[in-house]
Length: 49
Image (cartoon, rainbow, N blue to C red; front, side, top):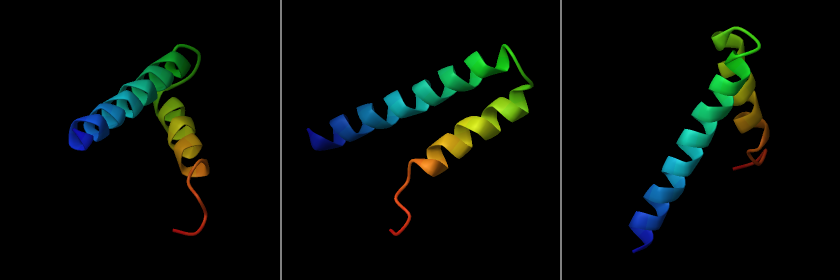
């Protein structure tokens, strides 16, 4: 049960990232949009793992 929930959460994060990338790609270059989404993910991580 927890494995399926984890996989579901992963898929939500993946498709939300893709949606954000393609939404930003409508107003800028796709590479820059991907870089912004990547920086957003990197900024949301705790500093000390």
